[in-house]
Length: 175
Image (cartoon, rainbow, N blue to C red; front, side):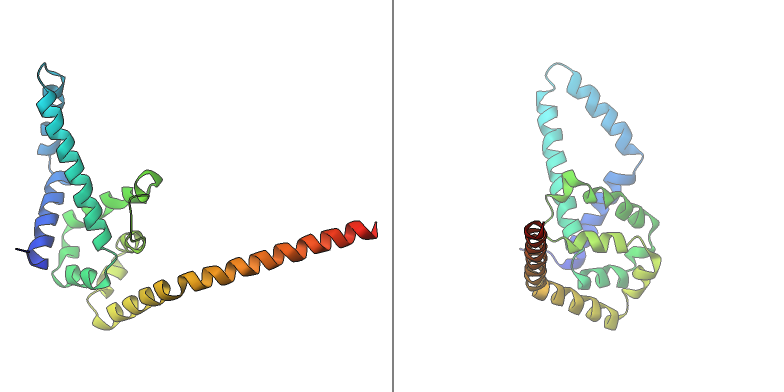
């Protein structure tokens, strides 16, 4: 049985907000650290490791969901961007732009949108259906033609290198 988009979003946001901004988390972390150091703390260490993996995967999934403009519109329409805790959580998620985390990202547009979500004017525009359609269309065209443009770029670079090598050889021959 699958859950609806709204239930999934709320569940994920509640999980993240509680785990990233509550004051109890630090106290729990200290207790967990103490328990890990105790004799017989192997089970506790395994449990903490599972929790860390679960959190990593959940945060990765949430960050990647940000690559969908319609999901961003859903968040805007349901006023997630008006909640200061949620905005703090989005700021916290910027750690995904670091090289050691970025290698796990499958949809790089999510990082671009995550950075745009730090701007209030972008968040306000997300309610507008026409703006969402424009963003989605631009995203589609990027995916559609990105490989083609990269191939054209590579051909130009190769041609420039070839011409430079020929000019260098011509100058050597003249001397």
